[in-house]
Image (spheres, rainbow, N blue to C red):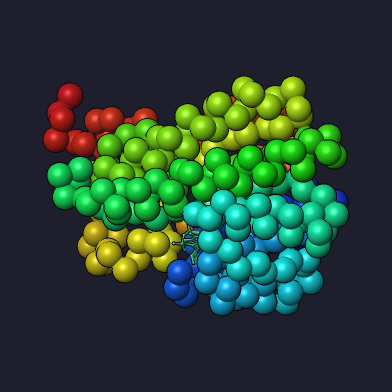
Length: 270
Ligand SMILES: NC(=O)c1ccc[n+]([C@@H]2O[C@H](COP(=O)([O-])OP(=O)(O)OC[C@H]3O[C@@H](n4cnc5c(N)ncnc54)[C@H](O)[C@@H]3O)[C@@H](O)[C@H]2O)c1
């Protein structure tokens, strides 16, 4: 586990939920990195995952570092379980300040290929889940003067990467972020969105060979490989009071890929 950054008190006193706080396989995904960084910054973290052993792995890392976290098994596609997630955070830690909606799945199918039950499942997992956890979180955040909701979209919500349902759901996350930010600003609720680029995580490692990984790395202006820690640091900013005047934004964490144009596609010529 990377320990390149020291602990801080940027989130001291805050209670945070991270959904999908484990990683689907060995290695560090966005949810795991975010949960570890939240704990290092002083937050108490509820680690939500539908595979409890994934959340427990993250908890063991936070425990070993002396942080505060506990696991909770729940499926964010269930409205009942979404409510239980929010209730559990408040029961265990007394309040709710931060909700990081990280769960997301991708399939890489075109609209002509995907069957509609699968389409519904992607939408429920990536988009409806954000609405469900948020609708239960917002009233609890209001009780203590407000909070921060962080939604994990993707550059797939901004530019085409193929994968029709994923792109539609991630664009939907951006729209929902803006709707909630506008509707609940006067409640002291900030809502922001992170759009990770081609970060190298367990979510993608199984489908990339070494050559594809290298080309992916070189595709952005910075030409370096992103990790889940890069996404996690953006989440720490949105969770902290450092971003107290920031709401409704979409932050690409993508080494400049979405603004690259000709750089990413040299065959365009001058
Ligand atoms: N890796 C990338 O290149 C990349 C790029 C852009 C965006 N993202 C986004 O990052 C987020 C995921 O990142 P990650 O690395 O943490 O993913 P991951 O695939 O490692 O999944 C994290 C955890 O989510 C859990 N999970 C899956 N479905 C769930 C459900 N219905 N309810 C509760 N838990 C569930 C899994 O068990 C897993 O432990 C997604 O929203 C994804 O779209 C990733």
